Length: 285
Image 1 (cartoon, rainbow, N blue to C red):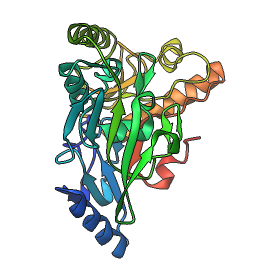
Image 2 (image 1 turned 90 degrees about the horizontal axis):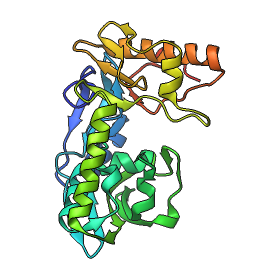
Image 3 (image 1 turned 120 degrees about the horizontal axis):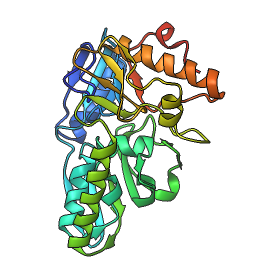
Image 4 (image 1 turned 180 degrees about the vertical axis):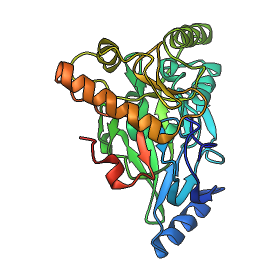
């Protein structure tokens, strides 16, 4: 799985499947259910940490074929495997505004919807018109009002997302592109994009910022094995070349322990764990 995650970390999946369409996706899920095989829906793995021992189940990769994106009269229709950057580019090329802040978020539309991804004061939930999911063999269309969204959370968790339609506004192509470029420059200046990572490891606490708490604990640059708390942005744990999942877990555990000891703040992970045994994650609270 190190080939399918932004972290470049993770052992083998027992089964890896790439459905070509909704019919094949449904068939794969049915086979898994009939044989009591656990399955995991994968986008681009941008927010995922996979165990060194891998995953005893079927990884269903949506990022290969569910990637279509279409713009029409202020609407963007995108498959769940479409990259957010691709959706944003299509919107910009069609003079549709609203996606600019989200353009630099790594990952897919499906993953972004599940976790209600956001950046620079905007969340993807603000743009949602409808979402299509696969449920018991049928494609169901949900309106925005039927979906519960919160900070880095949505009621779509556990659902199989096929695609979504986003309702935006018409705008000026040049201004949209300029705004996207500004956010891109800002992101590159503040985030360690040259090394593999899962992005922000922790959710924003109710008060303050995770990165600031970590930095104030003196943990910037701290390493365990090949994993390092970024010296550019302490909210990122990067793979310096040969990090294992255990290395990253070790740093997450250290961060949570130090921050709660010094500030009384319990940080909550944004990263998704896959393939870990229960005892490996017992310390998470």
